[in-house]
Image (tube, rainbow, N blue to C red; front, side):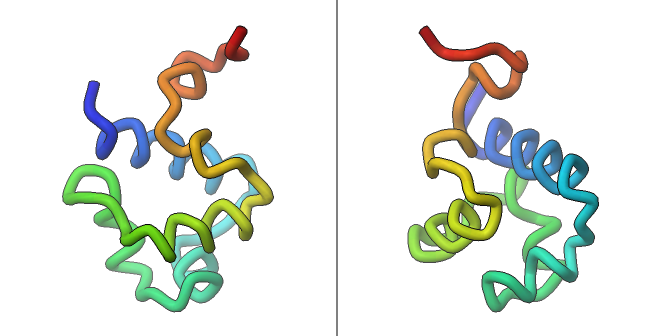
Length: 76
């Protein structure tokens, strides 16, 4: 599984857990909802946006592309 796919899956999971819309996430990182919705299958946001997303969700940046998150397991 590639990083784009993992990122998209993990972003959708975090979005759902937080009960957020694409618009709300986009506002947090100064991007349009359509742009946020394409992240994952169509590529990754730039590094500065990745950092903003991590801050917004209060997550470590690596959690967005972690295979452990995909399988909902804790790393050793």
